[in-house]
Each structure stands twice: as C-alpha cells, then as structure tokens.
Image (tube, rainbow, N blue to C red; front, top):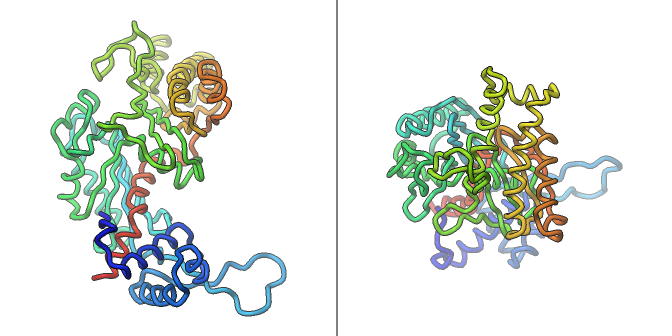
Amino acid sequence: MSRDPTSLTLRQMNRLRVIEMLYRQPGSSRTDLARWTGLSRATVSTLVEELGQAGVVEEHEAASAEGPRPTGRPPVLLSLVPGAAFAVGLDFGHQHIRVAICDLSGELVAEDWSPAEVDHAPTESLDLAHELVRASLRGAGIVTERLLGVGMGLAAPIYRATGEIAADGILPGWHGIRPAAEMQTRLGVPVELENDANVGALGEKVFGAARGVDDLIYVRVSAGIGAGLVLGGRPYRGFRGVAGEIGHVLADPTGPICRCGNRGCLETIASPVAVAALLERSTGAPVPVASLLELVAADDRGARRAVTDAGEAIGRALSMLVNVLNPELVVVGGDLAPAGAVLLDPIRAAIERHAVAPAAGAVRVEAGTLGDRAEVLGAAGLILAQSPHALAARVEK
C-alpha cells in the first residue's frame, strides 16, 4: 500500500512527515510539528494549509483543563480528520467471522459478527465476510472511496511470499487459496493478511493492555492456541510465518493426535475445546466453553482444576519463549482468558518455576483488555498504521 520513500519528491516527503507526526501525536501545534520534523515553521504552515484544503487535517483548540482559564489566545492544535478515511478489520476464527470499521483516530464506528464454519468452507466464509463488510459500510454511511483498505486476521500461519496458508492441517479446506487476493477481488480495495495471534498482539499494543510495550507475547487461547510476537516494537513472523505457533509444541508425548498430525501438542490438552472435552468425559454431560467459564465462576472444583492444569501447561510452554525472547509482557487473550486468575496464576507460577530467574523476574503476565475484539481491532490497526502513506498519496490526486 505504501510507496517507496526513495521515489518521493522533497515536497511529498515533507507532506508525509507531517501526516506521520499527526498520526502519532494528534493535537500538535505548528510549532510542535516544526520541532519534531525539523522543517521550518513556514514550510509546516504551507503544508498544513494544503492538507486542510484536502480535508485531511483540521484545526481545534486545546481541551480546557480544570482551574482558571489562561489568559491570551488559546493554542491552535492540529489533528487528522477522523472521518477522512476508514480502515476495516476482519477476524476469521475457526467458528466465527467478525468485522470492525475504525476511523483515523482508531475510534470504532461499526462492527458485526456471525457464526461460521471457517475451517472447511473457505468460499462460503469469504462470501460471508464480504456481506458483513458491505452491510457495515452501508449502516455507517461510509463509501468505498473512503476506505484505506482491509486488514484480515486468519487462524493459521501465513506464508507472506505467496499469501497462502503455511501449515497443513490447521485450516484443511484452505489449501492453495490466497485469502487476501480472494477478499480483494470481492471488495475492490487493498487487503492485508496476517495470522490471528499477530493481529491480536497488534490490537493489544495499539488499543489495549500492551500500550507502550515493545517486547511482548500475546497468547490467544481459543479453539487453537497461538502466540503473536512483537519484538523491538515490530511484529516477528519468522521465515515462513510460523513463528509463535505455541499451540503445536509438544506438551505430552503420550497425548492425543493433533490436527497438525503430531501427537500431544499443547492445544490438545490446554485449548478451551480440550478442557471442555475433559470435563465432558468426567461428568458425562456436554460442557460448552461458555458453560465451562460459568462453572469456573461458580467455583466448581472440577472446572477450576481443569483450567488450572491448562494454565500450567501453557505456562510451561511459554517459559521457553520467555527464556529465548526475554519479553516485558505476556498478554493472555482468547476464549479462556475470562477465567481470570484461575488461568493466569498457574501460567505465572509455571513461568517462574521453569524460566531462568532474570527472564522470569522481568516479565509480567496480564489478561488482555480488548476481549474478543483484540484480533479484529488489530486487523484494522494493520491498515491504520499505513494511513499516512495512503493519505499523502491521496493529496496528490
């Protein structure tokens, strides 16, 4: 979506620098922009006037604080116009599709979701996502021309060189499909594809529990278990997009066969589906994931023990990542995260027990704050992060 900076003229580069600063620091003055960009105040004023005429930048007064109002003229601040452009986020889970639309300020302006059997029905899932996006745009009164693009999170590793699913067995019906290209054909706007745990990590970093943290692991404990990695402030995907597939590390050599073809993977014993199935075998009654959480909240001993054991297994697997990556923060999200301390405390204890002391002592383990919106907001955040380039290019037209 972004242009090669080496192909930009000096004026285009200066315009881009101003937009980037306003994206990072909304509510800046002309003096602030001149100081942060190194441009003269006259140049900044000219560019701001140009961007204002293009409907990209707007002026506003500083929010009044409590106490006596200062004398003199209030400072004139600048921000990107929130409604100048919008980003769409799509989250494809194993059993749902969720859509969110955010404006340039990151404000959520529309959202929707639908149950879906995603794993074995790629065409139907993509068609449903198309319908959800179009309906959300109509409901919010947003025309396609205002869209910067669509970020798309999918519950599988992505081989970025081809745009295909990078691991067999995880989404068996999607073999050979290029999801971003398929979605772009349906919607007619640029689509960027990313693993769901990676967009969950981005969502919590930009909007949630990991704001200001540059080294973090986001663990999504849902139908599968995956980890999104942010290292040095940047997503880390690995050579084939498989980095962070913590759900498929060995947890029990004698455990059940996993859908990936290996035996005893972490998700076969610690995913919500596996925990619920364990309780079903012991109680003889169906235990949906929602009921599992209700049982935990009601202090049911069997449910709490099952979730505690799952947390300990997840913590053991995480301790290896904590040793290798030395993160500041582990954020736990997904369907099982609402279990709270019943899940988090054994994760913390296992990391403390199995990771080396300096790494274990440095890391915090916290629940995500975005709930089931983490992935879809992170997917929209993929596009918002590229908005300065898209807006700068729009002014050229």
